[in-house]
Length: 136
Length: 90
Image: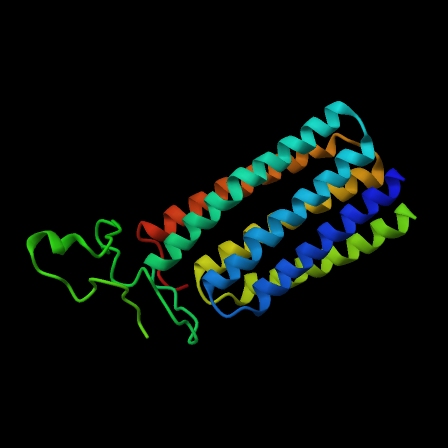
């Protein structure tokens, strides 16, 4: 019974990791690739660790497996955010079919500060990025 | 039954590793390569977990913890390097 559960967890986890790898290989630009790897890859690793915890059925092993799961759960989004931010600053090209880039011209390239696009309204001058800007 | 499943899982993870490696070598920019490296680290964590089940040695989980930690620190370091004036286009 436990064997079936462990088998299912391992297979599904490995399937998610294969999906993440196919995504990182096939998708067209940096944000879409990160969309594939950070979610599917982390979920695959977490399900594999769940399988390990069920297989050994020991509290110390399960505690370590849960610690790995929590660690991946905490760090994967942070790492993805930091890499995506760095990629955006260095001008990684977006896919040609991108419809909307909300961050366009909102980032100050020198100070790396994100503007909301409403700052200049305070001086009574509506800007051209006043509302809902996009590059389409 | 579990032995067969473990072999299949090894095969699938190897395939995923191959795909991620292709992106690592081809990736047009440095952030693409960092993303591929992070995925490779996730896959290796999975490998270590499956290997722990395969051999029955639970101590391999410590290796998985260390790999996850190293991958996170490497991703942060690479991102800082790229953002604070590293190579724009390798």
